Figure: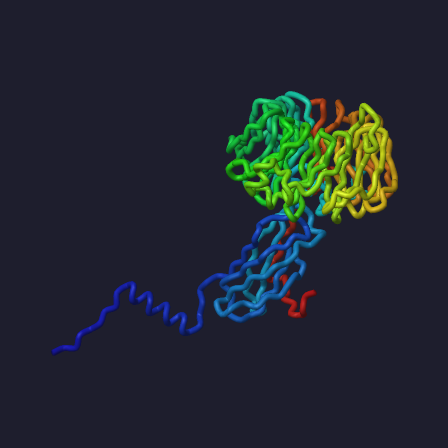
Length: 507
């Protein structure tokens, strides 16, 4: 009987060949590297993930041509390592390269940019962009108009800049505009039925904003279609603060609302004794600080706000409403949170009141007054940076006040009342005035570095990111300013062969 021949199937042959390859230690996978996230500001942390490298080999990781870190691959030839984006990395496209000691290399890109995602930059409302590295006191005098976009009415809303080139701003004409931040071209707009004094906030795929048609809106990030809206009992000029998946916002119906950002359902509401024009500020412990025209600043415990006891009592039960500071005069200013303190401005009094026209500092835990600084008019929302509080006042001045002592560092006089809130970035303060000018003021010395005259009063608070300054004006325009040589850059792509692995320990 002849011997039977075994003829392997195609699948069996492939498995046999694969086994031989694995047993021989050969690998046909090409090295690759990815980053997560793919974009972010200078000094942010980036996870670098590599695969397809030889097993148990040392890999050198570069940001552009800067040697950042050493990683060792696993038995599968993979690694994950976190690096920091250099503080000097300018806005634009950069490259992350991984080079092994044995010569294998892979490369990907990373986009450096900064988002100014909501009123006064973040939910703590400090008004500080600590990532700005293009504009500074030595360069800001060269600012020039990049573009201006004409809306249908005054722009009191402050712009919000999302990662990339998406700029969102509201207008008194009832529209929310999506503009290209580099060119000023209109991408699209959405009319929400009432004037938009509220400043948009961008979070996780949506744009949140209030309107004088008594509603709070969530619009889809890319096309501005409506995702949801929530009705309040009166106009909403307060700007939303977004934190931990929650939208916090006030209404002229005297309530503060906390809404689920994804679906717009009510989590809780607090009833104060007057209109809530103030924009809430939120700290890392989910305590919400907000002013009311009833003359109080409130500290609300968001963590306990969903309990039945708190809801039934309008959040006035123990452990619900943490404290309230009786300013005795309307608090339309958005509070700013820094170093365990809450800073806020007050309005004028029609009768005698001790805290009118003042910047106040109170203890964030107890509400106890630390100090008071009085001006000659109602005070704007403050900005805080490096132990100094910056405000505008209706008396026409911009003030720099010590955050811990309450004494004056300097003041700068504009040509009109100042209700615009200051924005601070890299040693420069930006603020608008009723005189129609946008000012850049040296943060340390309080002297003017630059100004630009628009055609109307500026009540909008500026936004500063990626070497550009954005602001609205009552002349119906949104303005953008930048240096003559656009800061957005594309770094020359490094040749991996030119990057020599450095096996010395990285700091």
